[in-house]
Image (cartoon, rainbow, N blue to C red; front, side):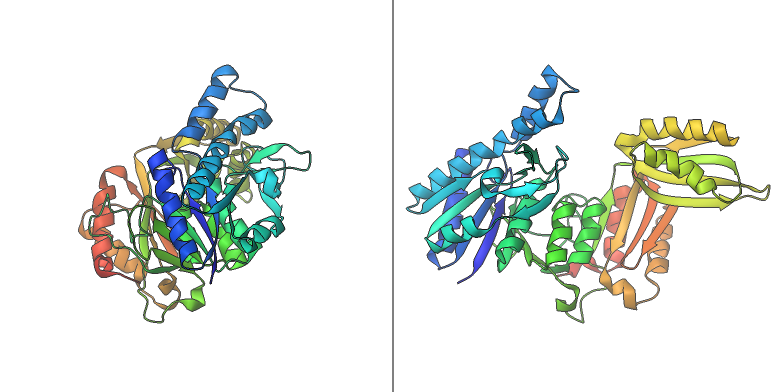
Amino acid sequence: MALIVQKYGGTSMGSVERIEHVASKVASFIARGDRVVVVVSAMSGETDRLLKLAKSINPRGNQREFDQIAATGEQVTIGLLALALEKQGLKSRSYTGPQVAIRTDSAHMKARIQSIDADKLLADCAAGIVPVVAGFQGIDATGSVTTLGRGGSDTTGVALAAALKADECQIYTDVDGVYTTDPRVEPKARRLDRITFEEMLEMASLGSKVLQIRSVEFAGKYKVPLRVLSTFVEGPGTLITLDEETKVEDPLISGIAFNRDEAQLTVEGVPDRPGIAAAILGPIGDANIEIDMIVQNVAADATTDFTFTVNRVDYDRALEVAKKVAAELGAKGVRSALDIVKVSLVGVGMRSHAGIASQMFKALAAEGINIRMISTSEIKISVVISDKYLELAVRTLHKAFGLEGATA
């Protein structure tokens, strides 16, 4: 008998029929003797609808009130699923985040979990009751409802699994696991049986939309076995686990991630002197704009070109700040580009094998794909290329590293 936390996303809860399907899945686990705690998202599109409604009244309103409104989406689905479980002949009880006592800080719309009282849920499980918990939400020290940001229900599920010391946290979504790359770009992409927390964290941060980054961080920190499965297709899914639990013969590269939401800025002709990087990037950071990749090239005339990338939604603000900084520093000007994408190889095998980068660069060069920027870490190599080559680059690298037959 296992204790399992199951999280179902918005597509899984998108209609009455789908909610009843989720109830039948939960019932099948109970029938085999498992104890199950369920975490659910709002119906697909409901949170966006609620926030759009709020912003139509006051787009710059108090974020506390936005949280109060957004949190109601999950309150509907927990009640509906509890009723559907009763229809299956099970005892069930629904809980909002505050009712479970998921305590957070007071950063509305992006709150972080501080503690969880698991006693109530454990007591329910012992009494044969299936708890259904609202994801994405909690309560702060003042008693106000908070929300955890986009994808926050994943984090709720993992955090509950950690607090309950669950045997596994299962994330049910509309895909049947983590793939070597996006099957919509490379139809030969294969589902991975297993991937490490580190690799999944890199893939999530690089554009893979399967899991929220914070949920993977949480799972890795508290060593919660995490499994991604499909609500609609039966199968083993992908297990996300510790590095040391992987097999020695696992492939060098586990997957290829990409991000279309990149923008590139270059401050040209900056005086090459100590502190220049801080002078440029400091004001960007002060504007609450996250910087991704950075390259600095020193010219023969003792000036430097300073290139960096930001998320495309921050492009306009970043360009404005960069132009102001360029003028203050006496730089030649600012160039920018929106026609770029980032493509990344991810794999723990890079730690112990040389030549991965050169193999990547040769494969791209053979297809006439020019690399604009390069960034590396222990288990990742990222390149910035022209967006028109995205699909060609992904397919080329997928084949070059033998991922078509990967089952990790």
